[in-house]
Image (tube, rainbow, N blue to C red; front, side):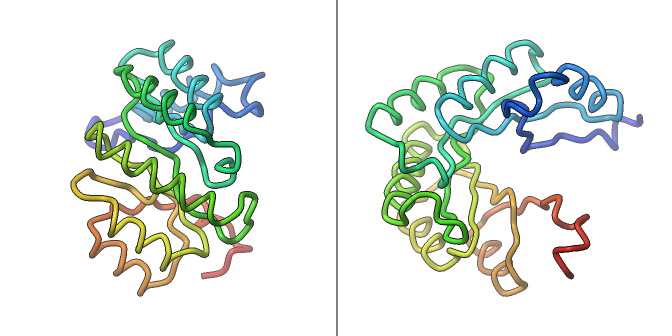
Length: 190
């Protein structure tokens, strides 16, 4: 593949148990298709640790994030932040997250989601690391928290599912927007 067309996939869930049986083959197929490198998404402490372990098997090609997804924020403690801070010391860890708010499914109580989003944004600011963000059906509260807590670090909203006005708001906040696989799902509409 032409170097100008190489792809970097910034949000792969290779630490998920569904990839245990064929993870190496999936990675090799991605490389063969022109994916130059991938960033494994950390969605909780255990997943972040596993992402780091997998990334270590492919130096310079695979990287990881360290964070807690809003679905898992109900399990966070102060020890969680200490572990994320420790994981972030590894060169393979390139962002804090996946963190954010998900008021669509509410697998964790909203106050918990908000608390741990604020904490992870503060951690990213402390460490001067990019943020890997998630938001679903919580746009206003999400934007309020980011506006108050995020000062200087770059951030990507990796799974954007909002409308045109939402996109303008996020771009005006300086967020990079990730295009989700939903664009290929005809059940999602236009």
